[in-house]
Length: 200
Image 1 (tube, rainbow, N blue to C red):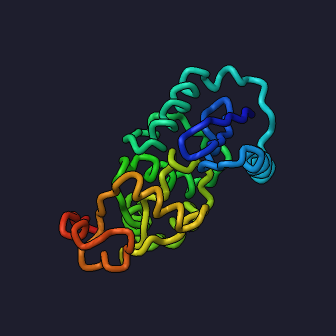
Image 2: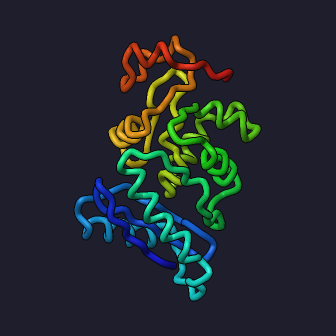
Image 3: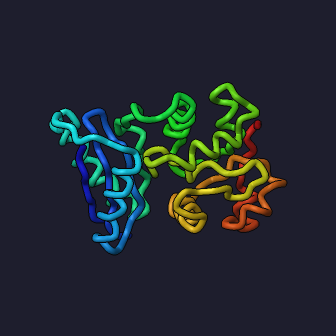
């Protein structure tokens, strides 16, 4: 098991990496000691064992991740779906949900119900929300791009403030019915006019 800390314009970003890929990616912290404590806590929480095959985790893509994190926090469009993820320690349902959300493009917003339909369980949108609440791969599995069907933000493990910040940073375009956008408070009227409907 390997810990990495990357500098960005918004602070220090931490990652946990196994031989199979990313296990966790945290949002920026100004205080690096606080970030180290979070990484240690998360490592213990998900009960990861130290691995000896660290070289198998691929130093090349870790270097690229470092650069892409810097670009992302400067407001540049970045595709984090290219990075390998370690799904070994998650449930089969979480894996289905996370793999769908993993593919949501930069700046696009979909709903919990849409994700539920994509995995073949259209009535399980609440379970989808619970699965995303346990997502440790923030940005790589971009759960901030999933909102409620009524246009409200929905939950986020790091708090709704961060969810709003990430969507603003990406200049996210809505993919929910226009009539429900009044509750999605980060968008003004001009944004609503430009929004496209998504068949839910």
